[in-house]
Image (spheres, rainbow, N blue to C red):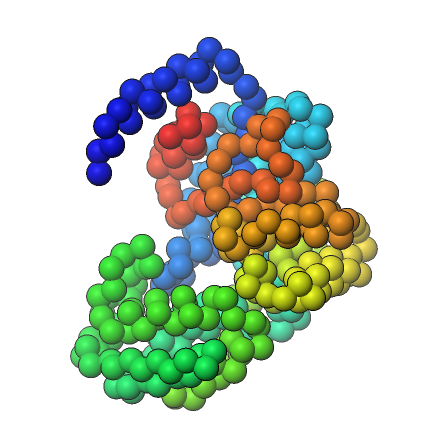
Length: 345
């Protein structure tokens, strides 16, 4: 949709930026450095593409640590064209594929870990949902579920070629069959639920789909020993991503406090270092609300990252640091995208 005057407003904005320049930084949000056959949530960046990203960052930008950027915002001295790398969730591939490349290019990164999954060969709920709904050879033609005392029913008749489009399909595309629609509906319904309620529903779904509840290789969080290996790298900081990766804004205040506080204590007990950085699960404005930043600050964290796009300047709240989500782009596409972000596009 064309908005009248939008082009003129954009030009005025760019002119003002040029006349009154200010130092700006970008925080990048990754999840996995992995190349799976399917990636419906678009969480994976291949090791090859990630290395291209690191080459470009080292050649054209100023890579700094998250803590360094957080301190810079507090003293109004954000280094210009700085880039910070972060990872959410704590997947084991961060150790296997990200760490060697970060060390090769001497670029720092922060890895945010959801502690419930440490030392468990267990998938996150969105990965379980993919395995149950999208990867099953075939599904029954009807599903009925009760979620928060409300009844839902789905009919799955379009399954002759259940997995035909799976490798090319992701959540940014329109659903191509009933399985895709079911997956999207269930993802929306499960997201605000407590961890315990999600577990009950996922067990019911696995039984309904006749799928064995077994985690896939490399679809789990790093173990105690693996977290220690990560933390010993001079280029890696371990941060907290709550205990169960619950949508905090949808939980009680007691549950919020538990998720924020216990994850910090748990990680500090493992790595024997202070855990000063926090990442809000999902991280949109609606997922954070108004009270969580002060709760995170009172718990003893130095900063927190969100998941909505914006540049970091000297005026940015260190407990609401915006980030840009990175996709599985090749180096040329990545460079163009980063330049657009720095140009305010």
